[in-house]
Image (cartoon, rainbow, N blue to C red; front, side, top):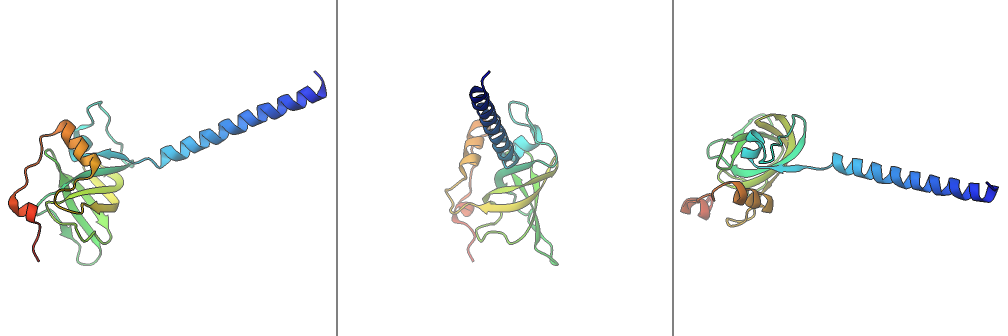
Length: 161
């Protein structure tokens, strides 16, 4: 093989290897930042395809805040509350200031880490912005696996303060 051809072949192999390594590292980084969405029922019982999250996994969960479940620590910003759809409730622990629209009976989406099969330590809590809005993931999941929630007139009116 002449030196010129050898140099071209080495350059082509190095280019293909570098491109492959770059794509591999990008895919690895993206998989580390992926948050999978679950409803409380799917979190406890598993998704229809049988997948369940593992302890320590990052995830998003959406549902309705259970009436009477919000407990605030008077010494800190730690708040614990339950979220449910039509199945079992899941406890969410959040250390921070909750959104202004957060209240019992409201739909929320929380992002965090699974601490145990029914507890999530959230780093972000998002509340819906009006009575008719439901996050798309929650609406889609509830449409597929659950009967629709029935809201009372009081819930539709919201809290009056």
